[in-house]
Figure 1 (spheres, helix red, strand yellow):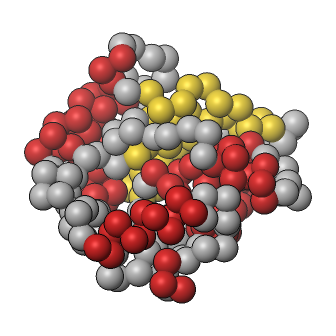
Figure 2 (tube, rainbow, N blue to C red; figure 1 turned 90 degrees about the horizontal axis):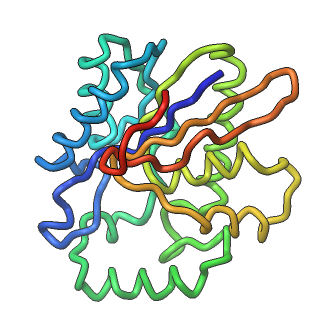
Figure 3 (cartoon, rainbow, N blue to C red; figure 1 turned 60 degrees about the vertical axis):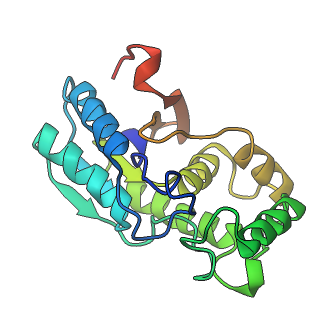
Length: 214
């Protein structure tokens, strides 16, 4: 099985100095970069796109689906980590956003932290990633699949694939924080079913850096 993990294209939230929300759409730059990514992906064959239902990911999937002429399927539970409603769409300079960032940094290694006790902890996001991994393994053997979702969820999913299930929290969180994923970036994972082994072919490829092999 080959998985091509795509983080959604860029939104205009930064232009408006706001945090992204579930309904944040792609911006002009984001759509342009996703179209370029679709052109690159069209050089190979894929069976299906699995996508988050959050707006920016779904819009990314629609562009790629049209370019590649392949179907897409909305998958529940692969959306981004959920924060309290008070944080979604808040101004970057707002008091609540600054307090959120302060507490987030203070809880850097805490899988169970939730801001204001609401939303979703990183452990809960990890559990969703674990369920998605099982879904992939059970339903799409020997397929070439594009997965379009979000940065934090993807980092949880990649860590879930690479680490043993019984690993300690600190090991997991250190791997989670050891890499980042850019908008419209792509990561390729291969799964060897005989060895039950995941392999990274490339991580966070950006089209501006040159060509890559699908």
